[in-house]
Amino acid sequence: MSLKLLRQYLRKKEQKELIDEIADLYKKFDSVKSYYQASVFDDDLGVLKKYKLVIEHEFFPKSIHAEPPCRISVAKKAIADYKKLSCSDANLADIMLFYVECGVEFANEYGDIDERLYNSMASVYVNACEFIHKNNLENMFQPRALAIVNDASDLGWGFHDYLRDSYDQFFSDFDDE
Image (tube, rainbow, N blue to C red; front, side, top):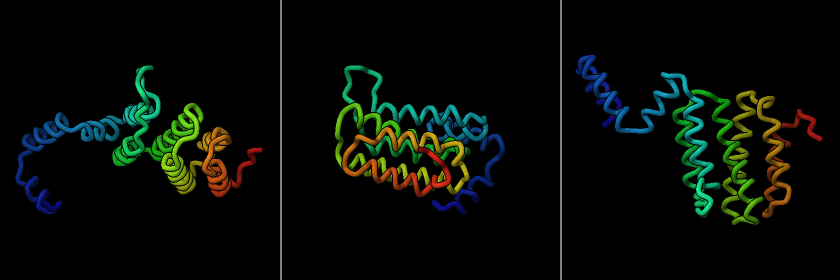
């Protein structure tokens, strides 16, 4: 169905029918709930927390007996899903850096991880730095971006060097020595 057909369908509905239909979508789909929570009810931080918990669980599950799933696809999907709902550039930058922070902490705790995880973290780090730079959020996120680089200093696969080069590219105006 095209958007044009959907609009035609919705125009034929009475206001009460539209309200009932939206309420039904709200009950059935978490993403609709999250959208309204973030945008209409101005609770973007609550939605952010929900998606950060998804990422955190992939690296550090709540149960001390559980093996970390470390499913990159699930953690990155949390970022993508949040991006669709978010109305805050700062919170979007926050969740991207949070993913990398969790990944670096995981690698430091569990030892050298496979190249796939490092590539994913590097990609998200660069995307976060580009987004931060594009939206003039450097002052807000520079300390965290640098902390990630420093926390990755003992990790393999050339990961630290890549992060450092990326950091230098986007935060060259900051004296971090």
